[in-house]
Image 1 (cartoon, one colour):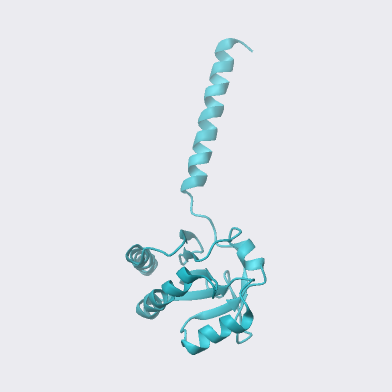
Image 2: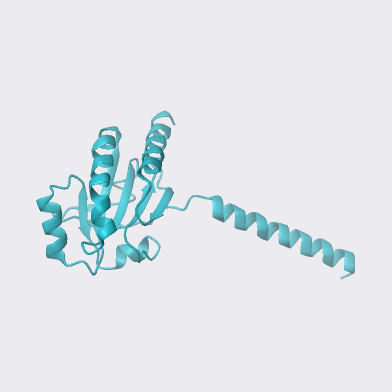
Length: 170
C-alpha cells in the first residue's frame, strides 16, 4: 500500500470511528428490559407495562440523606405530572433493609410504585452504585436523562414536560 493509500485509509477509518463515537454519545440508550416486583407482588415490565408512558426510575436508600431530602420533590413532580401520563418507580437498593423501605413508603403514603432491588435492577440500569440515581424514560423506551445525585428539579420538570408533550403530539 502506498503512502497516499495508507493516508486515505487512515483518514476514512478515523472519520468512521469519530462518526460512530459521536452517534453513540448522542443516541438515546434504550431502557433495559426489566421487571419490577412491587411491594404488592404485582409485576411491572419496562417493555410491556411502561412502554407508552413517560416514567422515572429512582434508585434510593433509606440511609442516603440526599435521597430522603429529594423524596418530597419527587412526590410533588409525580403528583403534578401523573395526570398527564407520568409514572414513577422507586427502587430501594439491595442493601436497603426491606423493613426500612416499606416503613418509609407506608408512613409517608408515597403515591408511586415501590420495589426492592436484589441487585439485578441496579445492574440492568447501568450498574447503579450511587444514590440517588434517577432516570427519565420517554414513551418509546429511550432514556432521556440520567441524574446521579439529586436532580435539578426545574430541569427535571422541563424534561418531563417536554417528553409528555412530545408523546402527545407525536
